[in-house]
Image (cartoon, rainbow, N blue to C red; front, side, top):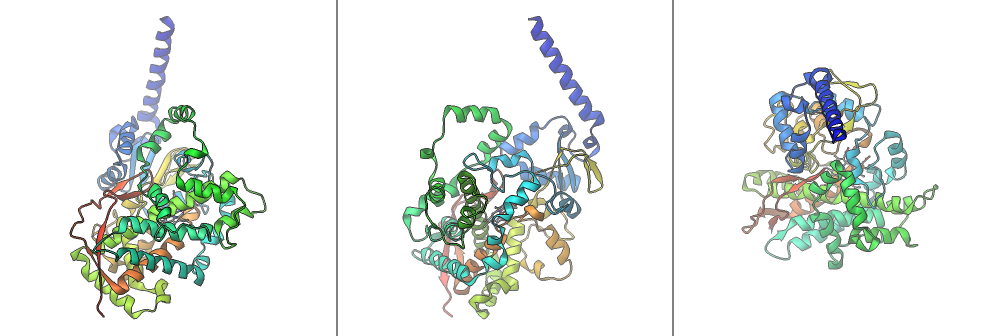
Length: 475
Ligand code: HEM
């Protein structure tokens, strides 16, 4: 009994010491933000578990400005100088936080889930050339994307209306898996037996499971020990990838998998599978959701003039010109600004010794981040009428540097999205295919919500369904 009193007393002293430090000594005490956030992270954690973190942070930035303390050891920033310091300093910015442990696959780290910058740089060298713009723009690859876009259109015009949500995920799966595994890519638009792979990656829910793993790793480790996983329990995507990696299957020399399998260091099979799975997962929702929300937005009656302008540019161009069309480019950039699929914070850890960010000293190990949702809206001199979809803003030369600096949809610095050129090519080719020949309208029976809801690191339309009608131009 006496022992219990001692333990409780010691715990109370430790708590008081922590609270004393937080209230009177922590450099974060003087930062803008709700007072209670200096005492505890519990409100932030509640917002995370309920999928409200992004919107809560945005409200705080509107109230307090570009620097906001959101917990005793976490600060959110929303300005170009902070973005540059956190993500671009020294090429790759600060190291990632352990939040990214959540994105390892098959129990094995990949480039995305690697925390420190030097290991990351070594991993990236292994395959980065496959994602360079010059590789993505190779005519044979472009013609594959074009074939997939035609298959998408064929699906969408089979009936009066089509669920573009699922077909766009199929499209990005089929394009991405070609680059990874040709000739063993996925053909979900034409082969129904591949559909379970798309369904698995499209409808999985990661919010609560990821945050449980992040905040209660011991509990989840216990659960994993009790329900031991074996290969037989992996989903169709993991099995497809593991099969390609483990068997002697030869993929084409142009593929990412071939590059990894023939690496001079004989890479571990589970690492190769984890890396390829990550590229698939990263490629499907992001590109599919951006296209889906964009086409939905263009199909609203208020957007018909934008659709018309896009159509006029496209009919004047030749198919090979898809990368050089100013209005198409502006429409995609505005889509990424307004409803990019990665609108949440990308957390980083302040290096040893602390750093000055946006003029304030932040101690080492503090978690710092920017979220694109706020960067794309807060500064109304850079983005006037931030909640309106206005592609024309990207065509103005005045202010273009500031606009492009704050466009954070793909991240920034050495850890920005490796698939950016792939995603841009896929999106441009698909929109060219659709709007050269068709008008799109919201289908009469479309009732699903298109509001963006947050997962652990990406957001997606709440209803996960989007019914659109395609009407062919009569010329
Ligand atoms: C519209 C489409 C896409 C968007 C908006 C997007 C967004 C992002 C963002 C914001 C990051 C940085 C994450 C961070 O710093 O924490 C990222 C990283 C990454 N993305 Fe994408 N992405 C898209 C498409 C793709 C595609 C098609 C691939 C296919 C390979 C891909 C693969 C990756 C990988 C591997 C990383 C990790 C990069 C690294 O750690 O160096 N993404 N993406």
